[in-house]
Image (cartoon, rainbow, N blue to C red; front, side, top):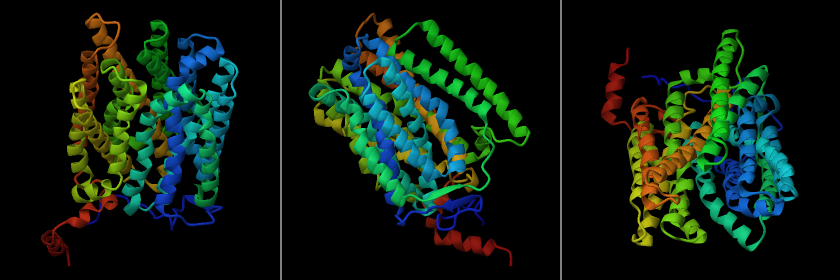
Length: 507
């Protein structure tokens, strides 16, 4: 019986639609490529979370109030929203290695300028520059890995790649607290410099370049509309999650985001009908495994986005721990992610993508739901065990989502798929913080509290995990043989099944 899935060419035989130029001086294994890409992504993920702990100290240096410093976070998110959709086209037009290397350089220079900022206005400019680099690093880094890895090694490669995405948000707050307390907030940005320089060297040596022979025409109007939509929504989510700013401004940004999004949908349909290629290719959602991974994965990201926000806050406000103590316990989820790395390929080979996502999705979401029951009289070891297990199962879930999404995507559309996936990944992670913050604030208001209590955190955990549990419906719709070429699950069929298949074959 022939496989219903589209076979992907190996990196040794690149597709005709992509040209390879200026190959690496050495041919690394997929693990080396994954670790190089992961290092850049770790730098971006760490920077995205480490800054929050430094805002009060930065506000004092700039002579402004702490709420005014929120623009340092939202300016970065705005830059991400505008430029992530353009990353796939840029990689096809200028080459994935070239763009990835430029993204690291821009992010590193932006970090240096942030560290040298003497005013809030200059910091905002530097953060916008940083965001441009970060917007290209996320999807283009994933594209580099997809084009450098065969299907047989893709699960293992994605396992290595996912580790920084899970570790960065957990390491950021305690590291930021340490640097601000014992050094200076500027070191939050200085630590990116050696990582960035090393990344540039390694990418130049080990990463091959690939680009489309005939790149699509650039969709400028689509970039403006998608940027306005995503920027408005991300800005609104960020403001509402922190309870800052005028509610009318937040509502206005939300409306702008929705209306711009509707305008983009109309523009994309017209452009596609005319034979063009919109900057966010909605036709990718016609690919079953990609569509189901995007929908189920984004629903699950509600919990993934909320947990780095809820856990440290609960341990400090609810348990009375110091920032350092809360940070050390929060690192348990990162330990769980690391433990998963070598397990995911074996689990997916044994049970397949559908069964793994279906069962593990319930387990990982349920494990985070148990966090709603945590109380100060729990032994610390039990909290470590719970959070380690939560990190393990959540990391396994996203390794599966991030891999099966590309199972049926043709090689010529990989760049479009990577930018599309990364765009909505960023949106839903921010949505997770927004939902958690809204649930927390609602519970506090209902109980007449000005400071969050344990019961309020319980409500927030139950809220985000209940939403994420809805992904079970979409996981169940995956075909039983989804991703079989990637996981090797199909090769474990019984001898009897193979004999029956051969017997039924026509002469």
